[in-house]
Image 1 (cartoon, rainbow, N blue to C red):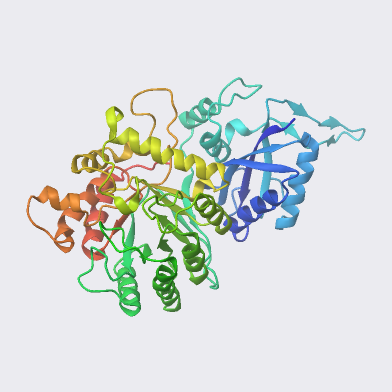
Image 2: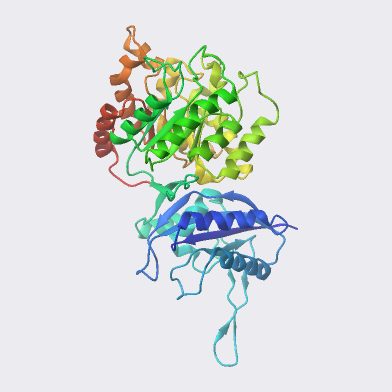
Length: 488
């Protein structure tokens, strides 16, 4: 019989993100011993008990195993040793720490008093300090909020709320970007909820709706470096236009467009994250090899049914496998056929908000079940894709509700709760429609700024834009107005 075990993981020595990821990769390589079922978001925490040490990176995972408690403890200790943990003072610095928190609903304590008066044994289940550790309870809230502590008879949710009632939060949820290939750049961790990050769209296409003239490799690289100089936090390089009636492009051509730009940006000294805008596994692999460390997928790992030239039943699984192997963040955008964005705009009696939550939630659940880390998923409701003007407005007006609890007050848990969000509202045609005059995409910059401010007010973590200087200033002021308290 397989047992379900909750394990807390922390690191505050060396490359914390790589330490945690390496530990998980080792667990995943031992499929005969354990299977990772779910992961929490990633958090940064202040040290506890021993205060004179660096901040920790924390998460929790849910695993299936047939190992008995002491056998599992030995395996986790072996994992720590392989990653490089060395013995220090209790609760002191460590490269990685893996603690068994819950093991089914078992209570277990192998401690005993030896003849010399010392205590032998080291495993207590449930972990005897779980109720006082935010850095354990908060990640557990992401994966097993309704699990009941077998001794305290309180759910994880209740224990967390009780702790927060008497102690201010010290955690920051973070979004990790792994080290780009073939560079000395380390992982980048974005603290969430303290500012709105700016993603600058860099077109490597000759037919993007936002261009006034065809893009070249040189012009795209120059545009990207200028966007960074103006304050962009991440660049999004795309080689396949998703505008209505855009020309179909082969995977080879798309690769030839984006790879030289990404490589050129890294060779120009860019250290910030680079996202590649694609839904094809072969393009993604080439882009990551060139220096990209994020994916922006308009099809949310499901391919695109309108791309009939190469869609097959295996490509969805291939994309999930690729993302899981590469270990990069992915922006999951809602669409009903991204290359036919003007179709399928009726969401029936449930309405567009619930429709987007249900449809995108299904894809997010599938991604998690495939082994993609929860902390690597970013939610984009897909403004302008399969939405009416009123539908786009409704999503912008209630943007925060996309990743909050069930808006109808029901007991069905929203699968998008807590995920970081991206608002891709730049120069969209629905903005031009609202202006009630003929506009080109370039004419919609002020309208984009207004939509960006609305997105900030609704808690968007990332805003995707084309013109950085103007929107940057609007977003900075909106941040100071609306981000008045920390959220996690």
